[in-house]
Image (cartoon, rainbow, N blue to C red; front, side, top):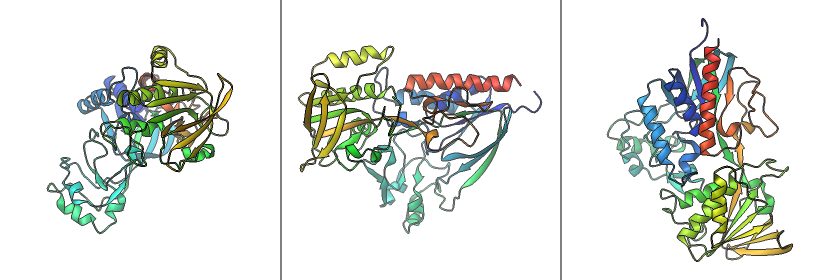
Amino acid sequence: MAGVTQSILVVGGGMAGMTAALEAAEAGYDVFLVERNPYLGGRVAQLNKYFPKLCPPYCGLEINFKRLRQNPRVRFFTLAEVESVSGQAGDFDVRVRLSPRYVNEKCTACGQCAEACSMEVINSFDYGLSKIKAAYMPHEMAFPARFVLDPALVKSGEAQKVKDACPFGAIELDQTAKTMELKVGAIVWAAGWDPYDVRKLDMYGSGRYANLVTNVQMERLAALNGPTGGKILRPSDKEAPKTIAFIQCAGSRDQNHLGFCSGICCLASLKQATYVRDQYPDARILFCFIDIRATDRLEDFAARVQSEAGIEFFKGKVAQITEGPDKGLVLKVENTATEQLTELKVDMAVLATGMQPNTSKTKPPVNAALDEYGFIPAQSGVPGFFGAGAVRIPAGVTEAVADGTAAALKAIQTIARR
């Protein structure tokens, strides 16, 4: 075992990354967990409900947060990104950049800094649907439960007033970026995914229409801690939609955009259709699809929603979306079941955008093989380096957890066999 570093680096603090870190730590290994956001939980924290039980995301997240708090073998770092990796399996040298939070460990989350702050910034947690104070808690169940200052606030003349409002001396306006050197034996890359950029979809208005939202934005509209307090409302006028359409494969299964199927978009849209039906029983709900893909135990869920009243299904891909004078939308679609060209007029529409792996946009700083879509294959080509979660394959929460566990085992085997 001489020369073999008995620690593991996990990149990404979503469900796959947290699972990999916790499973390795609970098996007796020291783990460094780095996350680029100021909180752990990844995109699951932004959901309203998730499969298979349709329960709030904090059910599973809080369990993992408790495990993290109780396990001294896991050291986690937020606002952290890997800059470089060198070395080989059993002996990797890693440089991590730590961006300033401007708030130290003395923070009690009292919120007095936010009360003193008048500056607002776009709330990325709500996918741009709302604004938030520039001194903010990322969300109400954020872990770590500590405020963050936006860099724009720190550079403004308001920064000192916000600092003076903190009774605990938790604000440090002079914090700067730092680098941290780590030596690890194996690396699990669980950097997650981004929703496909709708600005690239010219046929759907390239993101210009106010009442055309994405599936991830719909989760925030339905969430109690979202921009509308859980009420699904049109962004343009905050009115309840009387007609709403769910549009599948927005950029997916399209060689001009994402050439693959993300596998869970159909189910997510069916789930969201039930959100609308439960809030507005009299609303007309339209579901436009190529085919509905549901596997394993979730096929029963898909069949049940399809059989229930209140949702109309149009088998056909929407070719074009335009905006009407009342900010309503006109969908041009061929219903392949009836072979009719149809124009559907709706108050609001939801685009089911696919899951684009972050590795397709920012490659890991190792010479790992990526497939044609930017995913890390099962054999990365770099011993001791393993993809997990949505950077390996489009995955729901259950699959991401299983994949994180598998990656932890591979990382442990890398160290133990040397």
